[in-house]
Length: 235
Image (tube, rainbow, N blue to C red; front, side):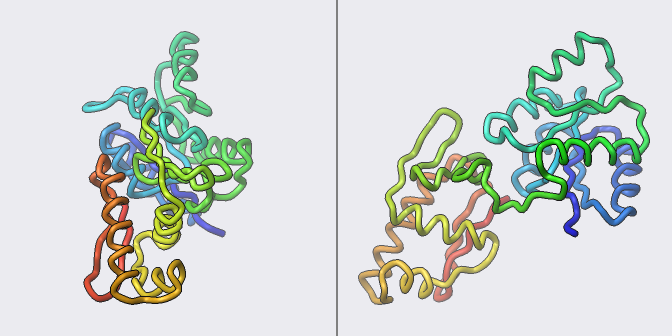
């Protein structure tokens, strides 16, 4: 069974250390710790978690601002707030940020585990989701963007960038193998049926276009390995 990838956004180093160690010791979790919301956003992109547990009051960026930015591009990932604030007003405010549940501090790691598994089960994920699974049936997270495959566009906030059929095909091939080398000859053979000077130059044009479309997120790179192929790298 795959491990649950937990992003723990917590500025209390001692608590984070205990939670990470305890959950990973069970063998059921892989835990990444971020000490504030800004680092949490970076980790969301690079770590690609299955579930998020976030403190609320943190330096640099609060848990509320962090979750608000996550929800702009991902409505599905389960999110829990961990807080010592328990007044009805505080709880109501938290749910306005579209969280799935609260866990009250201080808590036992066994209690956190139960909360996480309960949320995953409630949203239909009794085990961790695979990160190639869409946000919905044709929409995939790509850094700060959403990649709408069926309708052929990239979304960044309210901005929509229309893609050609060939741009979608190439980006999807790279996305499926993100972090891995995709050989130029494989791309050319698949979409042009041959690899020669003209098809190679056409591929270069499409890659240049995709880099331009994705430039708003500096964590996304389409890397050219000269004489070998291309790598889509996130984070």
